[in-house]
Length: 353
Image (cartoon, rainbow, N blue to C red; front, top):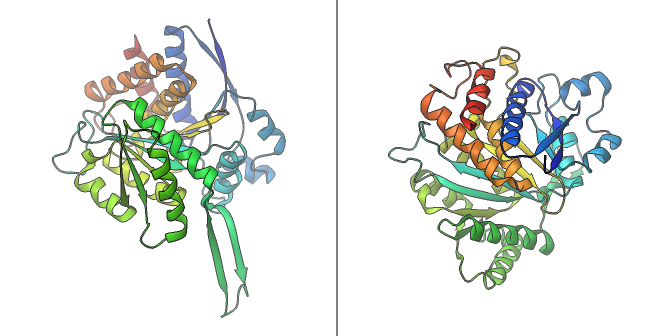
């Protein structure tokens, strides 16, 4: 083998392990065809560990993850764990500690996948959302005054730095250029109301745009973006936005591409350790039934390989998913695919060759 990668695997909760197992199967099959190898190292993080030990992400584990080439993450979420505990203790901490400042979400409708938008197909729905991933409201700045009284005040502050905005936008401009589609970058914000934060975003956007004369730029308010996603998704190529707005519009994007079962994303540190995950939840009611759709997890593996530089293998996996969707899968819903979870993984791996 010409090159080997150390991949930290966090299988997660509920059906997360079943999905990630199929992703590992397909990734290994692609690696064998394209002359590289992967050493997958499992880490027991998630709801069950928290319920057993009270730990979310121990410092010692975090230190080990810093030395991985990438992190492959399954769905995190357990019905017996208070909301926010795992999200803040694992997901947000990994993003912040590993400085994964780009959240990359492809919104792509594949053949034979239904979209709720009338008269739109794969040619119209194919864009990227580049979301700032470590600042904004998610920085956790704020507090309470007179908590628990009739006079209680809650303050939640959105933190936006020139450095954070600039590096996110530069990544978005480079992605727009290299993507080779329409070379159009749209900034999504709310300049008419959030004047301080989005004044900084807009000024930075306009300054950097001067360095990319080949990239067409425009701006739209976040509410208009939501409207145009549904009415004219073909207008978009790459969209850059902040943490909160990105969180909202990417869920809408997932729905117009066919649902959470086909949506994958990456948390990117271009100079460090990046993390890749299916977007859907842990679906605990289907745990162990071998009926959950693993395609989002497999596509997350494809995105991981692309980011690691194995672009041919990544493209091969995506093409195999398309063949599986076109030739075999009846539905993306759990239990309605016409195949079991493991059989879908087998199909994607078979089409690689």
